[in-house]
Amino acid sequence: MTPAEIQESILAGLPGARAVVRSDDNTHFEAVVVAPQFAGKRLIQRHQMVYATLGEAVGREIHALSIQAHSPDEWAAQGQG
Image (tube, rainbow, N blue to C red; front, side, top):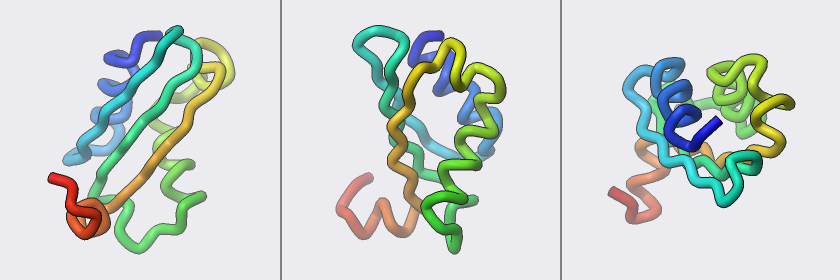
């Protein structure tokens, strides 16, 4: 999978989210996801929500995925746009 394909899956599974996905080798990925669905959720719940958007690709095409998951308010509080 490519970062763009992973980003598309995340955005399709979390409507209204913003996501940036990076990879140097198309096996190990880093994702920053800002989604309104994360408000009030614990970190593990947020990660589970992201993993759910990727389905069976996790553990297959996606060997490793580092996730930063923020609600829009948290993202804004960090001075991000």
